Each structure stands twice: as C-alpha cells, then as structure tokens.
Image (tube, rainbow, N blue to C red):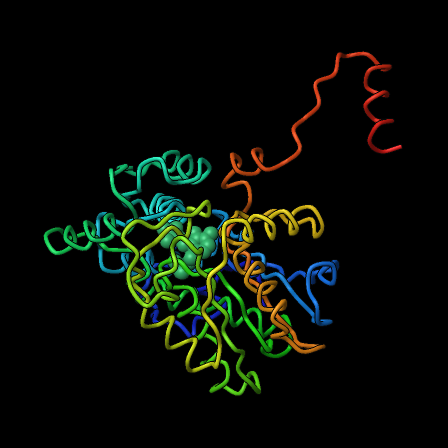
Length: 355
Ligand code: F0G
C-alpha cells in the first residue's frame, strides 16, 4: 500500500466517496505510533504505552483526517465556501484544505483564546478570520445559524464526513499494533474524535481485522468538563485552550463510546495536564500541545488508582503538534541563559550544568 497517498485513497472502501468525489488531500494520515520508553517513571503497573502522534499531520493536528473528507465532499457539492467555529486546530485545517480546493474559508474563533501557531495558520492560508467576544460554544451556535441562511458547508465535527475521516486513526493504530489496544486514551473537547475512534474500531472488528475492541478513555480539562459533571459549563476555563469547551456537540457520541466500550470519561486539572506535557517533551522527546497531553495526564491519574494491569497496551493520541502553542512551551520551560559571546563565559555556564 502506498502510504503517501492520503487517507481517502488508502481507505477508500471504508469512506463515503465515489469516482465523482474530487480528492482534496495533503497526504494526511499515516502518523507514527511511538512507544513510550520512560513511562515507568510516572505510572505504577508495567504497561506498554504508545503515543499516536497525530500532530505530524500536514497542518499539525488530527483535524486533517476529517478535513480531507469534509472538504472533498464540499467540493463535490460545488460549495463556494466552508465555515467553522474553532479553538484553533479546526480553523487551521479548514483554511489549509479549502485553500487547496480553491474555496473560501470563514472561521469564528474565541478572541484571545487560541494558540498563536493556529491563528497564524488560518491567516496565512487566507481564511476570513473572525475573533468573537465569546467562547467556542458561542461561535458554534453562530455558525449553525449562518449555515441555515447561506450556502456554506459547515466543517465542524457535527459534519458526519469529519467523523468518517477521523475514524481512520483507529484503523492505523490497529494496523500498527497488529490488533486493537486494551485502552485508547484521548483528550475530549467537542467530543468528535472519541466518537470517530470508537466508530473506526467497531468497523475494523466487524471486518474481522481485529479480534477485540479497546476501552475508550476520554479526558476533559477540569475547568471544562461538562460530560464528567453531567451538565454544560457556561464559562469553561483551562490552559489547554484546544479543549476549552463547555457544551460539546458530540456529547452523545462520547457517552456512547464510553459506555459501549466499558471505558471512562474523567477530568484532569491544568496542573496534571502540564506535568504530562512536560514529561512527554522532556523524557519522551515528543512535542505536543497542552491539550494533547490530557490523554497521558488522565492515564497517569487512573494508574494512581491502580486502574491498569501489568502488560496492558495503552494508546494515547497526541492530537496536536507542540509548535502550535509556542507561548506555553516558552513560559513553562527553563529560560535561556544570557551569556556574552566569549568562550570563557560560555564554558562557565556549561560547567555549571552539564560537565
Ligand atoms: N486536542 C486538540 C489539539 C484539539 O484541537 C481538539 C479539538 C481536541 C483535542 C478535542 O477533540 O473536539 O474532537 O473532542 N479542537 C477543536 C478545534 C474543537 O476547534 O480545533 P474533539
């Protein structure tokens, strides 16, 4: 199989496309599954943990999986522009794929609450970017109203093509592991991705490609945990801005994934998220954005409750690349040392730290 062809060609028979569908692709998917090598430092049971590093998609997040299909289907319909609400990554992916398709993109984002890299992406790809003085939930409400009146394709995950595209991540995990993992952990925001993974795993089971299903573990940020609380959160707050959502559109799908798989949806504090974020970068060598680290933060939290057994295989999806959010990376790291440009001064600093 040619892995450079993009998801639609690779998984055509599992996706709602025909010969008439123009394939808009940036060769997304086929992201690495990387084994954690220092996980015993932060977890109790001797588990095998892997990171599905979806930040290595073309626009730097898992959204590309859904966007290749959503934009291809919009192009098939002859739509002139797409529209979305976003905490950043959806807008980046929508802007990139619609640029390639020659369509307009309109994005509504919460003002001051999206990471800088994501804003830069939407802008450079030429989207019409609107910062609203509200949160993601307000933005989604507005775009839903707008598509009632105008011929735009809505490309948030309430668009079923987004879910269809994103389910391919589960296919890849199964192919990379040779079976399904025992647990699959991921951050939950608008709750599309957990719904998509669960659909993908079930389809691979019914195709006989895997012999068992994983238990789905979803983690919301403590200040934005409506599913855990059982009611919408009016003013969601978290440092993990990607999942700063108080009323997820995919609520039902997430609950079904949890209950049908025998899994868990729990919350993790910003402190737990940042501690996992730093561990992934400084011990495993992988740079993800803070929201992505909610997957590992949740797994660490459960392991402290002796949730896992020795030998369990756990996959944590790292949903977005760390470069999306350079501000947090810089704020949370040791600051560069200022040294004058002579060998003695430089050596003095090195002696203090490494030799
Ligand atoms: N991780 C990252 C990096 C995200 O950007 C998102 C969602 C999630 C996790 C949660 O995924 O919504 O399917 O439960 N970002 C959306 C956006 C909301 O607008 O970019 P979900």
